[in-house]
Length: 413
Ligand code: HGY
Ligand code: MN
Ligand code: MN
Image 1 (cartoon, rainbow, N blue to C red):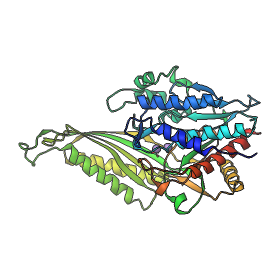
Image 2 (image 1 turned 90 degrees about the vertical axis):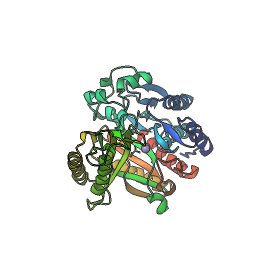
Image 3 (image 1 turned 180 degrees about the vertical axis):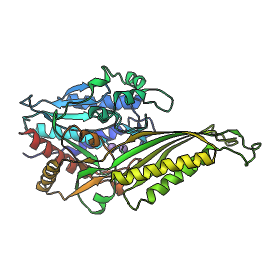
Image 4 (image 1 turned 90 degrees about the horizontal axis):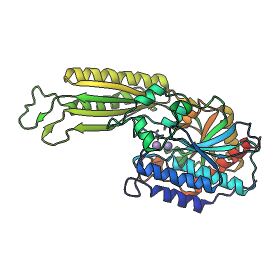
């Protein structure tokens, strides 16, 4: 079966979706259930309808677009990714796996493929952590990894909860209806840009993911004593920002002293109140992202950071709250599905490499539902989560062809 990808149409759809942003193009920002996220969802749902897919949404806004197969009793083969985007993002992260999947389905339809088992595309809710500090909200609930109590307790920085944002997103139904039954799907394969430099540096067309690194997030609130910058003498100050600054450096120290180059620590959120140049910072919020491919190493670094927070705040007489928003295990991808995907890529005469994903993805949690792997394509210098993120139409086309061929192979039997 000759699968031909319409590169021009796909690139135009990627470019058009990138214009749906709460920032100024080419900067992409689409935060969970914001006006731009809702417009982006409508854009993608429209493309799914035009491709003849049967649409439904679950109670947390995961979108399911199904190409019904001849045998409806067989578990579907699934693909998907996300279209929400962090502030100051690019236009390929997640989007390649959603629009590329629609193009893969259209290419199979055009080639006259008739699926025996259904093919389903999932556009996951809130893969990015921007709204609540925790990523993969939709796929966590699908995989039953996030308890309903934890989900109900989630708050954004203004104190708005998940219920508020579900209402903004027009979500219907109870959250306990989201969890998918085990093995309801035959396999899940996600197409994504690598978000790292390896494929480009080694001039390799396709990455096949064997393992997804273990992410964790800490949220801290530090309370000191504010005051006039001129009248408050240095002795006895309880400056919340300086405590936060020491903690951010402790994160860097913990991540750089594990002996493993795979440990990465980032204080990505650092908010200061009142934020006036002539006022001593009285409150600070930090969100800390810590990962490693090995849980043991990651957990040791996490413990080190928590100990440092207590020592720093005690010494500086700063009150603090510290919450583990998520401490996830890595995902091991299904060996057989990895081998199948690798063989498909080779048959298409693409160079291929098995890899670890340092970024997390919805695949991290879909691996709790069914056999899972990911197809990576190179991206410019590994850039991601920045507006100059880039993969070329021909790099994307190769990823889509591999995805289409893997989906067809599994859907045919
Ligand atoms: O942060 C991540 O790894 C993903 O891009 N959300
Ligand atoms: Mn991302
Ligand atoms: Mn992503």
